[in-house]
Length: 140
Image 1 (spheres, rainbow, N blue to C red):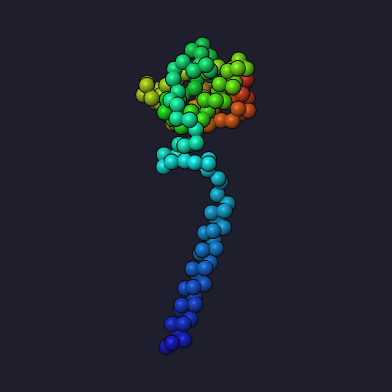
Image 2: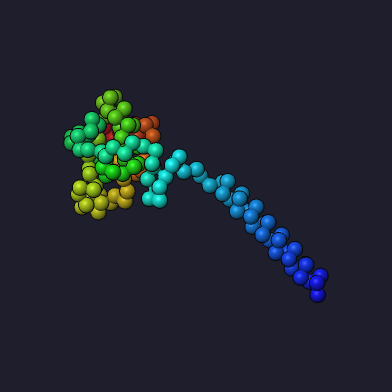
């Protein structure tokens, strides 16, 4: 009887080790998240300066709209990129999704930042300068 208990214990131990190794290998293959995030998924390593409707990169006549929320961490992280692009002559039309809740459904926006061109092309989420510049160039 003692040999059966010892054998069952050994099988359980081997299974636990196998599951641990498998779990560790899966966690190593997951994509890395931004340096710091909070439960909402917002980055915390950006300045918490709310975005205002008079940013240098906003122009009501621009052909690409930026849907943003003043306190959106990803929008705040996008702001310096847009400021740099504004120095190169690029502008976006401000669409404050927090101030006008109808924008979400009207333009089928599910998150901010989102960029939508006049022809309906959409670019969702945080973008690098190169990605955003390419999109803006394609929609002048």
